[in-house]
Length: 443
Image (cartoon, rainbow, N blue to C red; front, top):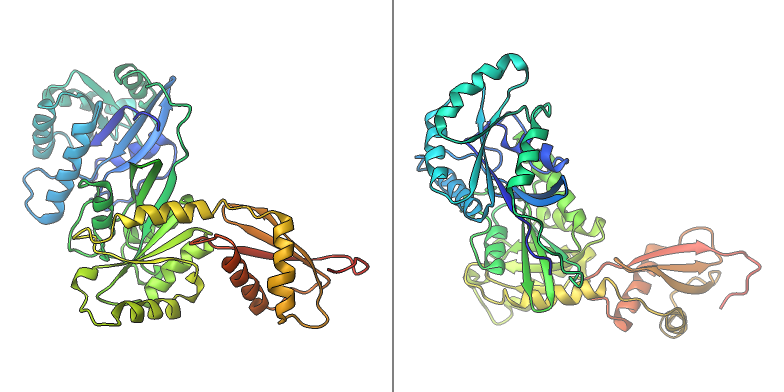
């Protein structure tokens, strides 16, 4: 496993341009940026390289010192975790509005930390505004950088000095294993952040009973046995048409992007509410993206039990999520930890299944014994042979004498037989069909 990179934490009150600066540095639109204050709540991580120095950078939620309502308090807790882990801190202030009481309070907080702090005076879009920067020296920091995160002005000077100030790159381990990327998906308030914190063993994502608390996605890398797993806690996904705030709409788009970057998706369902249409909609995202899927039924500790409750619940899941028939089901409680650790073994199994490759000879023996001899194929259709053409996810091609695609029911029949014979737990299987020359001899 690679040693951790030095960390730069981006800190500041709401709407000073932290996310714009973060996105400018990592070179992609990873954090949500709008004019609505308070968009970023959790810690958002990215990596960058400047002048040969690699580092990790974290965008934190806007901090309002002294605010005692729940969300601001949790944002402050998350920011403090980032501050404690940082090698370098960027305190971002708004150069147009001057020093505020919140800026002064944050400056006092950061002066008590061991990490070096750079004061980043943002929204200085031209030389004419440069005199406005002088006021900010009163905050007592030696390193003051006027920048325009939106236009890129001053970013080179900021990163040049940052590259000098952060620790030298740590030696990489050439034997490091590839990470397993696991996206935790589900509708709002089903317990995704609670599950992430339970798996990681720390308050990594903000947890609150308020639905929709997580808007962005936060990554946590965990070493478990021989596995290195990167967990992605995605925003609660709603149908776009039912999402009102622009920030919520953007978080849906970004959640799908993070899902597409993953190998495995844990679809979290609220055990007290049952399978909903939205659960099916979200599960469909994972299937469309070709991700391996684990269905985790959460809050099982508070579900009223009966002698057949587990079997009944599994039957409901299989009926309402037929397209995820390949996904293993686990009943858990993220709050109490009930059966949560079993997820690690299932993650390993379904990830391994993505890379199973079946020899062509075995596949065609299977084709004769388990498919053609069982019938179900129209009399005028001849299947010549079948071959696996790729893994991740496993993809097969059937060569037939027909130009038109065979009925989906036959495709499903073949998929089910493949699953019975070969170890493809939790992974989707893609079956394609191709026509061969009519003169070719069929099997």
